[in-house]
Image 1: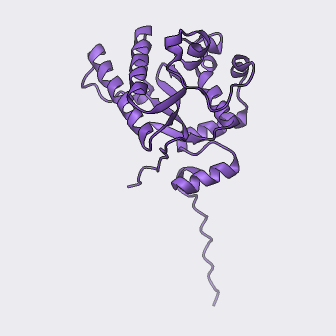
Image 2 (image 1 turned 180 degrees about the horizontal axis):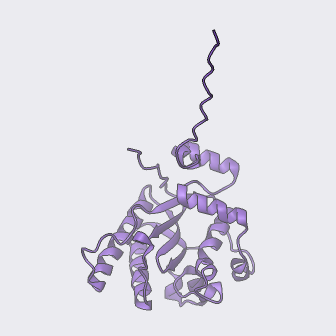
Length: 234
């Protein structure tokens, strides 16, 4: 049996976190579903020593960008968030016993605290816009960009100050599509848990947390063709 890939969860580091519904089914079917999850998210942030920089709730999954202040705190945070949401969801919708709400283990990867951090936050905050759920990135009610731009003081308090400033014209930049290279690399990081940063930083994180497996191609190694047998004539 192949073991689970290792996961970084160190204090002070930045991580992108994603959890997706089982079988990609919708878990947010109405406004009240989104609002219920946001209340749980507020409770989760208050329970732990962790910074929440960005988030976006989608019909069948959610994205977070966080930084724990204690080793292992990200895992505890996501576990409590997902479990509490599952319990309250089943109680509200009377679906207890219908199976898992989330698909297996949540996904996460470390993020370098420079322009790579801005790229990840941009990716997260444009998620609903790129999916056609709103007509402008800051118009999706269930994400950090809306809170930052339109929220009350209480709503904005959920979000922590960023380690580096947003670019000027942030909302316009979020509206611009990511390059193909950025999109492919981010998707690879999500699927494998590989660090997202420049080459030197990535290599240091891989060595530090023993994440070599996240950098290797998935799947079985390609078999080389077997050369034909040669027979010597008598």
